[in-house]
Length: 221
Length: 68
Image (cartoon, rainbow over all chains, first blue to last red; front, top):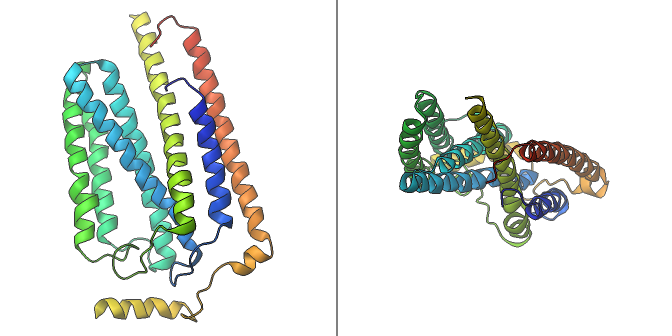
């Protein structure tokens, strides 16, 4: 997977499909949302991809703890970074959208606050790792913390924002978007795998670069 | 009730709540196609950038002995 090409071509095709069908295809007319319903293919895809990257990162952290293989630690770290990047993009796109639909770029909505807390917990993962110089210690404590960070996604993103009133579509106070018909046809086969594969692609490049750098470091020693 | 009040406030921004304003005219006039083309150009440009980075890393890997 790391050095194959077919899925990279697939990624490009899916993203082109997302952009063309996403902008030209029919969408349901809903008040407040209007054409911004097309953010489904971009903003929501960011959050979905982020969750996928955090799950991959979690799996590699567990694999590291079971096997103590250094490479799994690199995988876990780079996938967590990809998740953070996509999460920040999701937050930024959501904020822009909220500025024109809710009337404020930031309104301390439970979904916004939950997402920020989740991202801060993951940012602390990077800070924690960098606070240790010993490679094995860093990998081990990092892996344990990564599991905790993932567990914190449950209250901050999946549970609390859904228990309280929120302006976010899908919650109360705004027409809920239901992914059906054309939206589902663009999102599930197009936008979600397309954006996720792009993130995986960039992550594999970073992993390969990290391996090269370590190899070089070993040679220098 | 508070919720309904807020929804009403939001609805005031929309002059006509029965007819939801969509970019039908924009699409009919064909201008949205320009945006799609622009986005595709940016997307392909970024992809090309990543592809070149991929090639560069592959070249570096070939120059070293260890295989994973």
